[in-house]
Image (cartoon, rainbow, N blue to C red; front, side, top):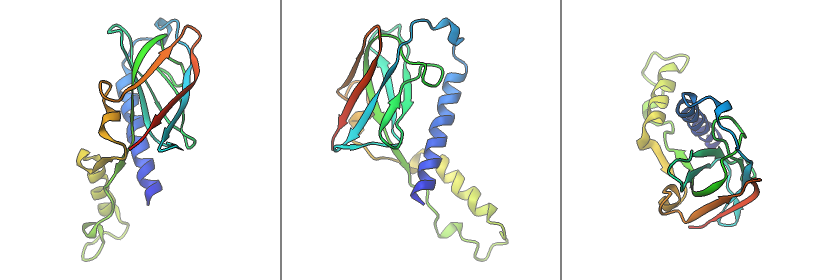
Amino acid sequence: MIKIKTKIVALCVGFMLLVCLGGCNDPSRLKGLVPAEGIVYYDDAPLAGAVVKFFPQDASGRTATSMTDDSGKFIMMTLNPKDGVAPGEYNVTVVKNVNDASPSADDSDEGIDDPDGRAAALRMQERARSKDSLRSLLPNKYGSPAQSGLKADIGAKGEKNLEFRLSK
């Protein structure tokens, strides 16, 4: 059940990234992007399924986003997967939410003509879309660029060994 919830959250985050970035400028106009990748740890263990976001300290810069893999590794993207970031200084956030929309007694087929379970599945999907069903697994400070305390300084050749260590 947890794997299903994780996949739902990952799909929602991926969809949001596509929607947010889909209308951005032509990537050919973004010259000078460099690699930015690393690993995120939470209480000394690799953090899988977290969204990492870079917020440029220069107001004219662009944000970049990634999601950690099963080993906590991430590769930043500005417009396209793994295209990198512009050199500069960034405030960094790391967010990992879980969806508490699990099956309930309301989702049972008992007393309802729902032989294939579609009505129950639709109720679960509706709860999954509700932001009230999302719960952060990390302290809230890590979701704020001003409060996270996480920084990345990306040089002209990029950075492939970033490491963010989060704790409770």
